[in-house]
Image 1 (cartoon, rainbow, N blue to C red):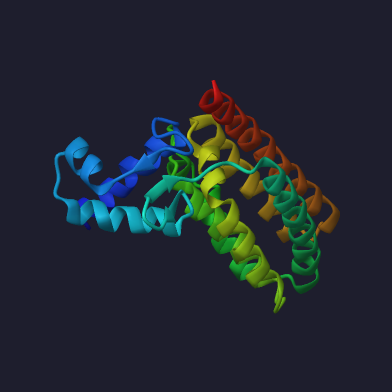
Image 2 (cartoon, rainbow, N blue to C red):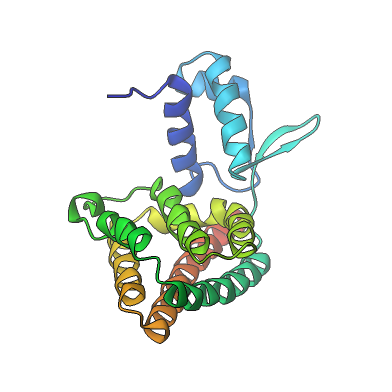
Length: 219
């Protein structure tokens, strides 16, 4: 069994506090304050802040330090629109190519009720991004995988919110499994419709959550 390092545990803790707005957008975080808050030295805090900056949860400002990233709802809307267009085309190409082995491997994970669990898990965002990027790669496109990775990187900080509720975790598992079954059945229309509905449902939830956080920060 692999034990998480102190820095990795701090990343988990701070990430969750950002997602739950305990560290609200626009607030400044410092090594000194976090080290005192969590009762650790500054070294693991420094490493954790670098990881969270790479995830776009924090922004580094010279001579100021790290700031909790703010929400840009208009940019998020545009990115989701582009993402839907890419993923619908990915579905069409997957049905034409029918890479059954890769799809069945994904299905084994997403339809596993033990993996689904009954609790929230913000770290599921990584598996979710991996699912969509794996579909883009399996499509055989030389363009879509990189485009989707770039979009996921820009949406990452917002989409973590999607998995802070157990119901969203379960729905993600069930929807991914349904999409994969549609692809394996060779039904491009169904797979595209399921992907489109899945992505826009996520968009609605994430947007509402981010809007509430922004309103609370302005209050």
